[in-house]
Image 1: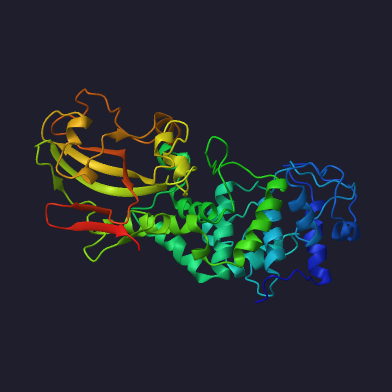
Image 2: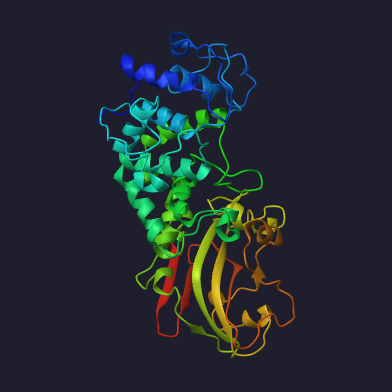
Length: 417
C-alpha cells in the first residue's frame, strides 16, 4: 500500500469532495459547491492569519486533505462527523485496498463509503467497535473515538505502535495522566488509545488537564491533528519520550529508565518488588509499592508526561533546580495499629514510606487518593489503604536508590556513568 502521497483518481476525488456538500445535523452546508474550487483553495475568509490554526488549515488544504466551501469559508468551529474524519484519514493513506463495509447505514451509494472501506482495510476503523452493525456516519467524532482511529492508523504504519496499544490494554499497571483515569468519564477500553494519542502529542488535554474523551473536535482542531499525525507516521514509538514513559509504566510500574539518569543494577528493579509486602520495624504495618512514577525536577521546569498529574510548580518549587527527581509512590498499606502518616514514614525503608503528600490541587484535579499528612492517626488498624505519596532522590554520582521486601526481593538503581 502507498503511504505519504495524496494523489487521487477523479472518482475518489469526487466522492471525497461531495462529503462537504451533504447536509448533516452538525452544521449547515452551502447549497452550491465547486469541486475545482475545493481542490485548489488553500486560504479562507473565515480563517485570518491571526487564527491559531491558520498554518495547519493552510497545510491540510494544500495537501488536499480537507477542503473548504464554495463561499470561501472553512468553518473552523464546525464539528467533524465520523464520515468526514474517515474521509480525511483515507486521504492521508491514499491506498488502493478496500474491505467491503457491512454497516447497515452506509450503502454503496453513500458519499463516504469508499473512505470507510479504505479505513476498514487500513485498520483505523474496526467493525467490532460499532454496535448493531451501525456506523452512524453523521455522528460527531468524539475525542475517544479519534484517539482510537489515530492510534490504529499509526499501528498500520508501524507495528510497534500496535504493541504499545496491547501493552497498555493488557497491563494492570497502566496509568494514563488524565483526570478521567481516576475520576471516571472514560471508557476503560479507550485508555491505551488515549495513551498513544497523548504520548505522541496527537491530542492534548485542556487547560484544566481533562481529556474530555466524550467531547468533540472542530475542523480547526482536526487540521492540526492531521498535520501531527502525518509527522508521527514518519517516526517510531521510541522517538516519543512521553509514549516511552507510558509503556515503561505499563510494563514495570515505573518510568525511571525513560525520564531519569538512573540505571537498574544487577539486583533488580521496581518490577521485582511491586505488590510484595514490606513490614516496618516500628510495627506500624505492612506496605507494598504499586507504582513509582518519576517527574524530572532537576532543572528549572518539571519534565515528563506525568508532571501535570502530580507536580504543582507553584507549590513544589523547592524541588526545582536542586538536582532532585520527584518520585510519586502508590502504596498499599495495612496498619497494625492506629497510626499517622508521619509514624509510618519512620519505618525501616524510606522508599516504602513517604511522609510528603501529593499537592492538594492535584488531588482535586486528578482525583488522586493521598493522605492529608496531619499528625492525627489517619490509618485505622485492620483497614487496607491505597494512596499516593511524594518522595525524592538526589542525582549524585554515588547515589543509589534501593529497597527490599520481606522475601528478600530488591530494587537497586544507580546513577548512569
